[in-house]
Image 1 (tube, rainbow, N blue to C red):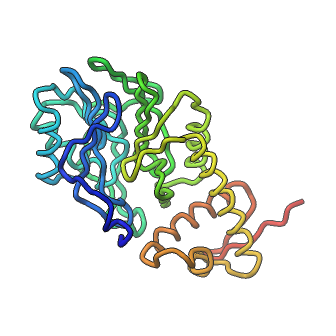
Image 2: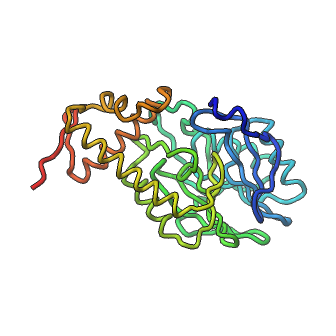
Image 3: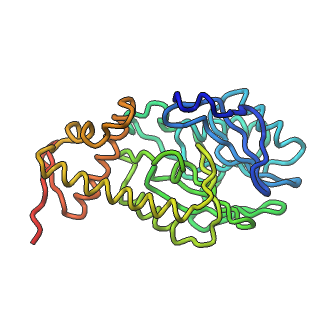
Length: 294
């Protein structure tokens, strides 16, 4: 987090960042959220949508309402239900009367070591959007793009009028997403990356954390390559005798803050489960071995 000290962080202020799009930054910075959760307000007319309302903190909710002003909120959209994304949906609904739409509800007792991103057990959507389904307001249309992987219920929102996509935690420019079993799934995550890569109409990504991605397909192509490189690295680790996740992580993430190693271990496990499905590795308890290829 030291690298963030000199970054301008306009908490609780609405910023115009693109046509039809304003951003309000929540005061919840962390190694996983960068400067904090970015809530997006879509629409410049009498009707707006709020994307990823963020944590249920009074300062942040007040800033969203101030940004909305006299406009009517017609949809509160959530990309997924980690606690840094959806808890403010319920109080915002109570204050505006707007329906909660987007991802499906999901709670797990354990999603790995990311205590700051446990699931929101109180999330109750009024409408779950299927892939390709859209909601419309004055001058804007948001289309749901199903992107499971980071979580099984993750969905992005594409703003058809401008080519912008609100990518939640699925694609971020400053960091790769944590994929944490049992709910996070590397097979699904890679398929969702490929799905976004094939969307040539998208011009910019607005993630929930970190700066906008101005060359989205280039970034996604690099992310797919990075994940394939990780997978080859894991296979090499097994080959040289590091056969548990605990043995692999210190070798693979030497340059990474050790506070992030538990989360890195979850991504390594997700890769191993994907490799197991493809019959490239097998396991006995926590020990992994290569499968001989014929």
